[in-house]
Length: 194
Image 1 (tube, rainbow, N blue to C red):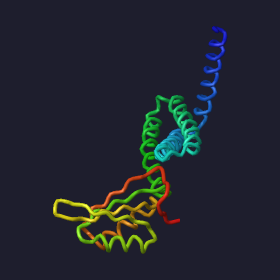
Image 2 (cartoon, rainbow, N blue to C red; image 1 turned 45 degrees about the vertical axis):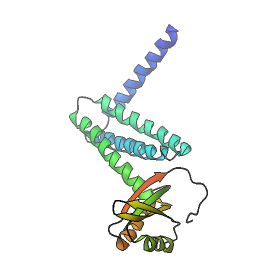
Image 3 (cartoon, rainbow, N blue to C red; image 1 turned 120 degrees about the horizontal axis):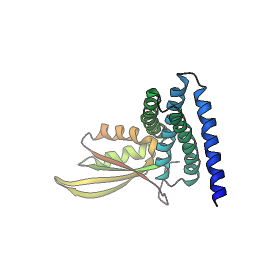
Image 4 (cartoon, one colour; image 1 turned 120 degrees about the vertical axis):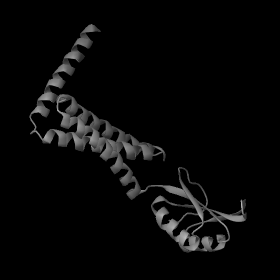
């Protein structure tokens, strides 16, 4: 067992020497730039992977997790190779923040999956139902009781990428409507726009 541990320790030491030599060969600005880009890719992938995990997309989550680990290790090894360079530390931190921003932006742009929109309206329920159906969306209308009396409660399952567009149309009809949306994982039955 000691022999195996010695061999692993030797291999790790040799790998660290090669890694440090590679990072030290880069021009002065290329090191921080590389660290920034790798860390941004790492965090973008992590953010998007987390969002897909909540939707139960296991295969794509595994692929993104593998890529995330690769990008993180590459960025971290660059940071450790020249830890005495303050610009590398700033690049690592800036890459983290940029990656989180980009991950959320990518998710909003792609917007995979579905969301359920709930609308509570006092007096405009029928008009809102007609507007949703005119958009080709299915909608269920329920009667409810709010603080000021009877209200319409509308439920509609829509593609996430359409939420902003649908919200605008609903508010044109009823600017006082209370609208919420949440992502959903499993869809079965019902009527969905293709």
